Length: 153
Image (cartoon, rainbow, N blue to C red; front, top):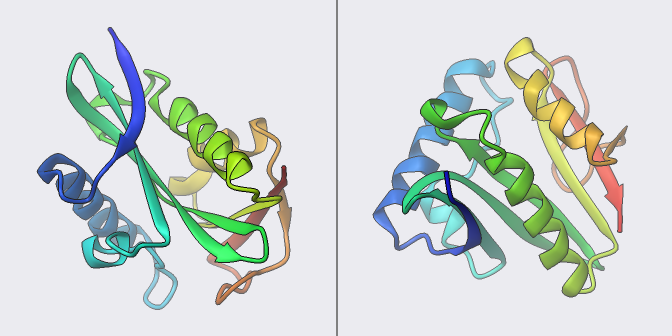
C-alpha cells in the first residue's frame, strides 16, 4: 500500500462520487433535520479546501476544511470509502487538514457529528487527535442527534 495525502478538487469525478456517497450515507443514518453533510455544490464553494487520500492511485478517502472567519474553521465531509477503512486514510487526511488550517492562521477547528453508534469511529478519531466536546457553533446546536467538537490550534 502506498498512501498519498494531498489537496483534491471537486472537479475530480472520484472526489464527486465519494462526496455523494458521504452525503447519501449521512442522510440514511441521521434523523430528518439533523444531517448537515455538504453536497457537491456545497463543496464547490471557494471557502472549502478538499484533501484526498489515494492508495496506489485510487481515491479512498476525502475530507474538507471550511473557513468560517475569525480564525475559525470547520471540518466537513470526512469519508473513507467502506472498502478501504483501516488503512490510516482518515488519520492522514485529518492531520493534513489540521496542518492546512494552522498554516492559514486558524486557531480553532470545529466539527459537528452525530451521536449514534454509526458516528463512534469518527468520534474516536477526533478525540484521539485532541478534539474535545463543546458548545454548538455556526448554525449547529448540540442535541440528542448532534454533537460538536473543537480543537485549539
